[in-house]
Length: 308
Image 1 (cartoon, helix red, strand yellow):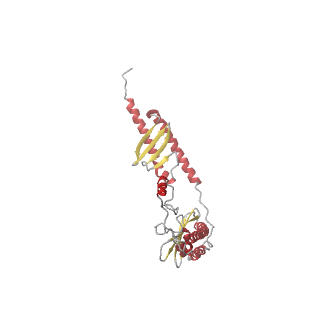
Image 2 (tube, helix red, strand yellow):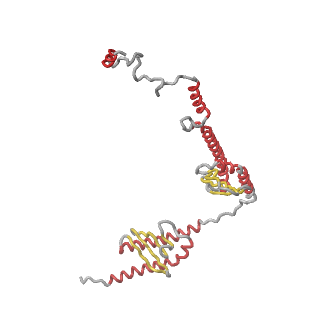
Image 3 (cartoon, rainbow, N blue to C red):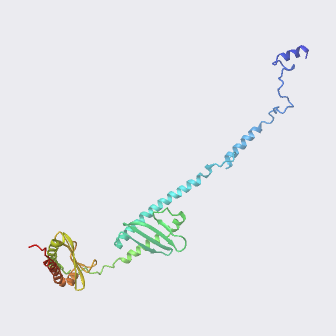
């Protein structure tokens, strides 16, 4: 290179560095940035083939992640099993419901529980309002299984074991029904006539009406001197007799304290036995009332205001 050329390269930075015209930073064959020649054309296709093989056959993807689609068949199987179990449980509930209604009719009530024995275990059927409440299977060994209940459904294995004995349970129920057949065939419905209580009730009501008249008369007299309402009590034949009045009418006449017999009541008349036990002491109660009034008259008869 001439001096003139060197001078021109200093003045012009875009001028080529040498006669080849290549820039200073162009890579050379010996530099680290040199690009290898294509060589064998199968190298790149080998990498593609590895990726394709990993995606197609290896459950672990090339990035190390888990492919959830590999578990899809087992999830579908679980759903199918659960749906089939629900269908079986629904059929059993309907059938057990018929047994529950038949049992309710046989036993004569809407509520109850009964146990049926089989060779493999024990079945307990509980019914409410004429329908099955629960059906429990207790095998000779192993845990109980609620075939019908308001709880969560039983495990599929336990349900299968229980239903293997379900036909035997139905047969046991059939034997229960068969044992009850014919029990009433020889029962006679030729019952004796029922005795009438009409005369007895009428006589009781007649006596109670008379006691009511006496009680109201005493209530009227007591209201005059003791106010609109109150209580008069005395002892007759060792028992406490208490007459309560209100507005000149007897509210009740009770013999024997708070747990005693009511000869006068706002609710119901006494039984014939209660009335017979106390009716003979009614005259003595009236005499005690009259004596009470007489005592009050004596007390007032001696009162003087000192005025002519």
